[in-house]
Amino acid sequence: MELHPAPPAGHPIRGVIFDLHATLIHAGDPADWMTAALTLMQARGADPTELELPSGDQLAPWALHIWDHAREIDPRSDRDLSPHQHRAVYDQMIERTGIIPTGLADALYRTMLDQWQAYQESAGVLAALRDRGLRIGILSNIGIDPRGVLERTGLAGRYDAEVFSFEVGVVKPDAEIFRIAAERLGLAPLEVLMVGDSVEDDGGAAHIGMRTLILPRTAGPTHGLEQVLRLVG
Image (cartoon, rainbow, N blue to C red; front, side):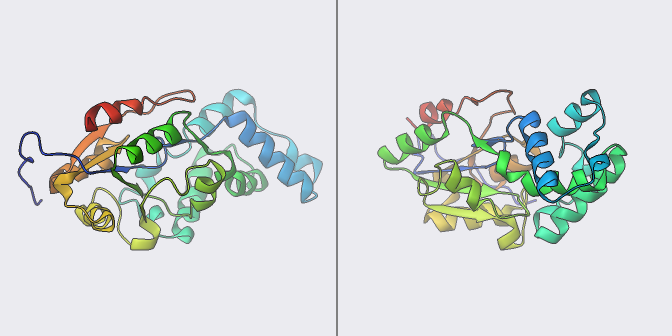
């Protein structure tokens, strides 16, 4: 693995790259997601028996942690390289649960991104960074296009560059995806702060000299992103 020395003490941060899911965006309320999926099924004319669900005790933990065990099926994150692979891994996870009917599984997948919401402080932190003259990037391991989410949540237009794994053909923690993000900002890696929620994925930025802030996943509508403003000074 290629390692780089730490940046000189006091070297200014000129750009910040954010992970998307569980960093700027959260997955929303599982109950609302289930309601949206059932509404879609009804609109499609689903048979009443298809609308009979497993118990809430069974569904709630699954909905809250839908992608937590994806690495067991897909350890290389191939799901984040194309929409086809993303759906294939999802279907395998559904099959392993043994409790989600096929019609519901499809409706849940089709309404998933509709539930994603920005953390309450996300837009304000991006605006504050821009006011300070920093360049901002979004870098996400994602197999499906999230631009609709960014538009709906008011985050579109608040950053300077975006890198999505399904478009560039490489996933975090591979060093190449961090280099691509820095290049699109017009900055050297040592001038950039990477902000994410995963040591395994986002921590890869440190190997090319990027300072890295890991904010572990939080429950609720806020995530503590104000810490980024303290770090950049």
